Length: 153
Image (tube, one colour):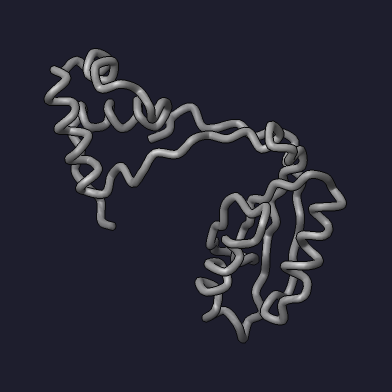
């Protein structure tokens, strides 16, 4: 998607919704200083233009019994680099994988995972990563704390 021109009001709407996606239109309109009907129309336009792609709940993995979070850096074998997008899509379906990032640099992918325990994390790596011939190397970093950015947009 190419860059979309946003007005200051659009940016305020996007910023407010990034922080609280379930904010009622009336409250959102008051916060950005426009009538509710105008706000509703602007949000719809932002959705139609692909600026707002959806609304997700921010789920605490620990509340679901997944106390261990980790970032797994994955290097793909040089002769398999053309398969990185396919591999990334496949890894999205692995239980415990929260996010998959295709990156540049020494590694090709970063997986954000959450598991019940360190032994469950080890099992995830052994059962879903280490046995893949296309992968050259993995490096696992345990996440102690996750802080969202202060400026969502």
